[in-house]
Image (cartoon, rainbow, N blue to C red; front, top):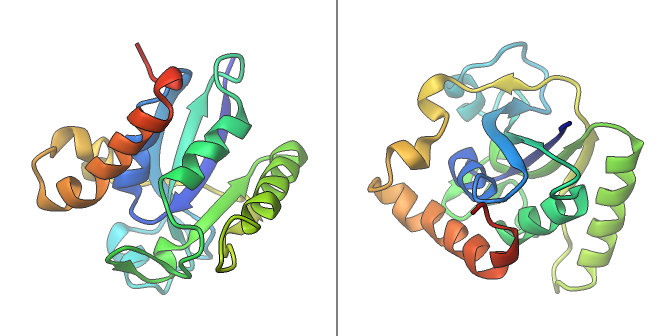
Length: 175
């Protein structure tokens, strides 16, 4: 049995690589969601004109890892107070967003954001929206960190997120 969760927290290469570390995660797929353009390309999404965010759809076993634990990891690997950006990546396509599938996910995410808001000096700007359609990104964007571990961007931005997951969520890592 598996469920799906969809998160956007900056560049999808970084978010995808972080979620792939977790036990119970069957797949983490980079893609686009939350916009108005049908079947967008990477170039179109990067233009900022499609309304889509770079997101990662996580397929997971809820008997091994819960949605609440995925939320915890998601918020640990990005700054939810940065509006339309993460680090060097700027634009609405890099916004913090949770695209929920069902009322249970919406309620859990809403409660998590509300609790998290008290931990930050700045407001948490993470959007919460129903997932309408997930568009899988082009193949060259799938498993990007795995395929390009020495890429300068990956070393500067993805690697620290992976290390944070390995350190903070050691008990949740794949064997």
